[in-house]
Length: 312
Ligand SMILES: NC(=O)c1ccc[n+]([C@@H]2O[C@H](COP(=O)([O-])OP(=O)(O)OC[C@H]3O[C@@H](n4cnc5c(N)ncnc54)[C@H](O)[C@@H]3O)[C@@H](O)[C@H]2O)c1
Ligand SMILES: O=C(O)C[C@H](O)C(=O)O
Image: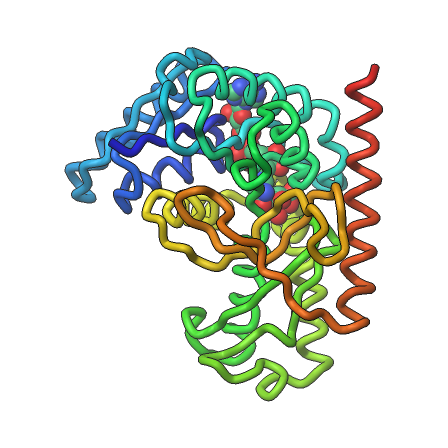
């Protein structure tokens, strides 16, 4: 039986559980939250949708009882505060680091071999937190952001060209923040380089909008996005459970790739049954390397903040 735990039954977690269920990605989905009754209620609601939407995946909920999560193949961590207008993702570090640490400890107690997908923000540094707490190999503790950021980029390109989003392929690297690095050189529309179809000034504007894509939604809704983030996390779970070996940008600790050591950044990887099967090293040009270095520097600064908090 394939079993997935989603911790945090808020907007992102409940959406992820719903996608995992209605697309029958996992046979059993356990939703956990700290708020009494919320996870049980949402899991029951998703289960009661099964006869309407015709799926067999079973969802169950739990208020902080991790014994129900035992032997999960994959655990998705979405617990933590979302930002409000005017805040950066980094402003969430203190509260969310404590939450991600305690959740990871509980998860690992009952599912020592699980693959962990972190969603909580600030994403790259929360992946660091889960990695050091779990002590799992780096290939099994990864962060979801790149699929979401590239999806935004691809959706904006689809709009600009009035072409199906299914045709747009792209890779984006770096931290999940304003320093992320979309790569037009590695963006195609049905195999055609995007640079042949969209003028530079328009593509630059799309890249800028992508970098601030999360903030655009926070401003509109007063809280952060959930449909695309929940679906993106579910897509990562699917690649793992079905051993699809799909290529996605995923946050992982770099151990020398791209000349970077000891920093958690989004890079293209092959995602399969063992988590990250391979980190793909692109041959970046000087401009791209410079942008990645800025992003690395920013993530490293926030990692240092976490180190100081843990030493308190
Ligand atoms: N990586 C990304 O691309 C991405 C995208 C969207 C949101 N996020 C982040 O995901 C997180 C969740 O966002 P959301 O919109 O679902 O927020 P939300 O407030 O709707 O849900 C968060 C849930 O976590 C629960 N929670 C808090 N502490 C907990 C604990 N110790 N154990 C279990 N559950 C706990 C809360 O009760 C709440 O139900 C935020 O940090 C947000 O910034 C990341
Ligand atoms: O922007 C946020 O705060 C949430 C998330 O990281 C996103 O990009 O939607």
